[in-house]
Amino acid sequence: MIFSFDIIILIFLVIAAVISLSVKDLLSASMIFGIYGFLICLLWAEMGAVDVAFTEAAVGAGVSAVLLIATVFNTKRRSSD
Amino acid sequence: MSEFFEQTIQPHFNFWIYVILMMLGLWAVIAKKNMIKKLIGLSIFQTAIILFYVSIGVKEDATIPILDHHGPEHHEVVHENGEHIEDAETSAHPEEVHEKKGDHSHGDDHGHDDHATDPDTMANPLPHVLMLTAIVVGVATLGVALAICQMLFKEFGTLEEDEILAELKDSASDD
Image (cartoon, rainbow over the protein chains, first blue to last red):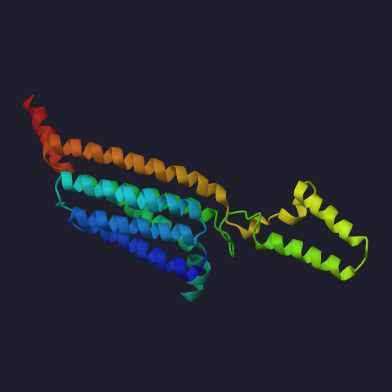
């Protein structure tokens, strides 16, 4: 584990989570949640959990972002909060 | 302040972020009114818990937990043995080399010393394996939850929790 790398990714992680929860456009929220997924995938790889990183990149970042975007296109794009 | 950072924050930085992310997710699940926002919060909560478990397995100066039986280290050992025997320059040694090679191909007795791996040089893989299942299950539950959201939208025409509750109250008072 490289501490300086670790600290940068973790700070970006919190920023991505806050932005994803605070934007009112649900499509942007889904995309930023995808960014969050790839950041956390980078974090797993950096912490030595390569198997978890593979799974997170394929399943967590890829599939869950696609599912969210598909749901947003089938429903409403605006959110009240 | 810097002492506080070095002693309290820095050694447990992953755990501080894990708590922050978990509380962000919990706040989103409780306080956000939009169902999709609630689900994003739920996913953030889940990754925070996975972050906690993976952080347990981290060791200082440890690499990825993959054993390399035919890696450069093993060849280096064989090469060293050969050089050592060549230096000795005795007629009996070629046979010894042959015997040793035979032993190597059988692989019976050399395994303990050559392949003994120091677990301190690798991250603990047990939490990784457990969390692999958690990620897959989490995406499956997210998919089901989003499908339920689409059904809710077909039924009520909105994804806002308060509007759905108001509509439910209206239909209940009509009955």
